[in-house]
Length: 281
Image 1 (cartoon, rainbow, N blue to C red):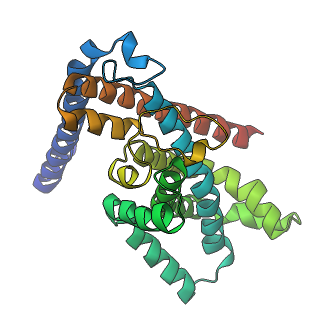
Image 2: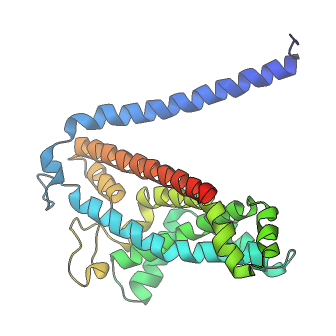
């Protein structure tokens, strides 16, 4: 058996030690939230209407789902088609492509509160939407757009050029090759970016306080998009900042954690199914 060099042994120990620390911190955070929040999860917490007594999370859950779907419907098509242009159509070394990528990377590093102030000035004030679901969804769509673009770009780059060449060799055009060969092969990577985007939307607070508001109500009616609402993260922030319902805030954190884990598990399952269908279909 070949003896390991000291540097190899050192790197081996450091790598495993770092992995143990990261995993331990994750377990510690999740365990702390579960221990503090599970005892305070009760039926009244899921009442249809929010009151100061039950501090129901049900309106926040509905608002979170609506804002998440509206943000994804706005950002995902734009992000995917932009990435397709940058990878499949734009010439390599194009200055415009470089500017777009630098801009996207810059936008991804901007603090969320800056997005919130922009949404407040533009969507809420200038366009006159007021504190509304629509203003919050559009602000979050701008926030997650660079993330979806970059992850889709990387997913498209990972598709072997042999797939494209084989499709062209069989007589398929550029557009047909992209949508029938390249995109299905890149779906797992694209879904990974969408999962990250959902996680950022669900966990966002600062941007939504300035745009969607903090009203605890279930959006309803034809003009629901222009109603103010609060998501789960904003609900949790409001409860903890008031200081009267700290235990319920921990319970909300547990619910938020379960929802995020459920979304990630479902997305991973869907990605595997789509990948298998692409391989054997």
